[in-house]
Picture: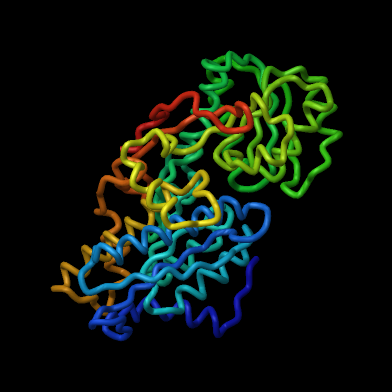
Length: 406
């Protein structure tokens, strides 16, 4: 259980009544300042993804200000580092909620961190929108597998599709495209990894594939000798890993060093250039990621050019496009509220922004952006990648719809 001090908790809980008054914070030429918060791991092992998220959100904020997207409003990004830890994410959510000028928060990267932030977001009517969370529970409740889908947090949205979609895509890709008949499944026991692995297993087995073994590891493990021995004995056609690249990179290399010739496959948590840096034998491995690669999207040409021109030291990585779109969605929600208020932000701006998010639609970097009744993106495009000559190369993209949520 995570414990907050009474002073912090009380401050967070009382903010929902305050809203955000734009006229309280002027920013040149009579403009109001709207702060967009951000929570992501900008230090630590997952910082490659977190820094790409931070930079892409900053680019969207810069663009909104440069083009005067919302008349009378200047946007400011307040980025906080959660170190990929749920308790830090909750603390960051509380801190951002304590600033009345914060009308939305971008992030986090990790689904487990999101679980610790959602209640703070809901209690403060503060929009929380992730470009990377994929665990279905976040939007559809814990009984979604029984098709009892209930949206638990009306202030939570995401521009990444769910693991119900991604894991099923991975299972079908392994069976139909990789021609794998036997799979060994490993997860890191975290919310994201367990959910992704479970969805993969369900779809792969449904199609006729055989799960020849399962294993649970710690995300902090780097010595996988025992796992390598079990996988080698099982003789799978492929190894599926539910988790992130800091562990899967070393795992893959140790598997191959140990004589396992089967390729490793994972989800978007594995799709990073750092996976290849950590794994000298990454050649031939697979990963899926949400959406199509931005490099192949005509809608992303300007984003790529602007990101390069901005001079960021780090790449936009897997979630650059979806982060830009998530940030732009908040900008558009603020725009709707300002226009409805006759050019001003109302006292209950936070609640109105969260409500407006449900009606936001625009053509984004990743394609058409909109949200369904659960706050999930309506874009279910997934792409499979394979490591080729030291880089991820896209192999196959498709919209995958395993279920009808209507």
